[in-house]
Image (cartoon, rainbow, N blue to C red; front, side):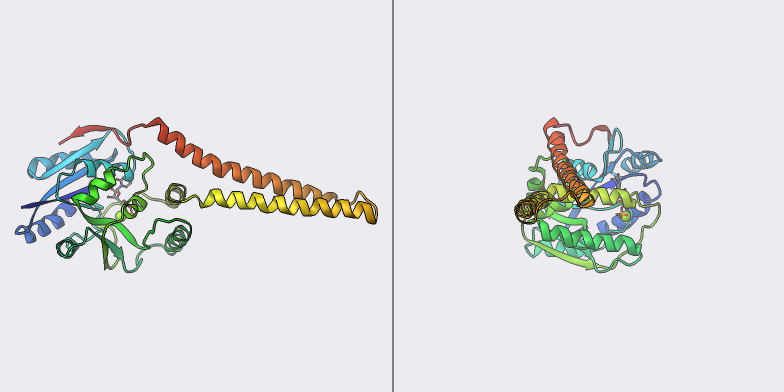
Length: 308
Ligand code: UDP
Ligand code: MG
């Protein structure tokens, strides 16, 4: 029988693990004829009782396993650790807060049987989400799809069912700066999506605030696009051109009408403008260099303190 691994990152989720397990075990029973479930919970350095809850459920059920990090390494790291530990022929990644409805797994499994390699999920709406967050999320997807070659589907969740072949290709990407939304799409394969209505968390709180999401989206831009570099190059080229025109203007005026010392204010603003552009470009280049720096250090993406 095929094994389906559920990779579940958990950060301060003591209240959600039990309801999550109840919901997925109902699906497990419903699918018992087709697949055997294997749970891989990853405790991403939680500061609450998440680890002890995980120890308990791992003891209670033979197919529940957990990894526990030495500190909070972030969801991307937790996903990677879980995917590496998963042994299933099929693998799914799910949030533990039940925002990814487990009952969808049955439909997703059917699609895999039909021959798809990846079945992703997307929210049909963003109901229950703050308006401002939806606005910026939309803006992010619009921009990144304009400037990056890797397509990222608006509303697509990390929740997806993948075949072993797809998981192995994702794991073969050895970059340390991992932006999963991009990596999942970058590997390609035959992909389809199922939609569902947005749900709210069963319990607990989201660990993403506006600032962390903003930084996350910047990672997306830097990791999956060279457009910011091109932008600063073009801005540089444009201001260079403008300065040539300016010089021509000054020289011609000197030769014809004769020079004057007016134009103080304009001169200062031009200097500031060029200076600003240079700093901006340096900053953009610096961002990429910082990424290269991190990559070359080849530090592990996560450190496991305990397994069970
Ligand atoms: N998560 C994690 N490490 C973190 C932050 C979040 O493993 O540093 C997990 C979290 O436990 C949950 C999933 O990632 O299972 C999604 O997090 P959350 O529900 O807070 O995000 P949202 O649904 O609001 O985007
Ligand atoms: Mg959530």
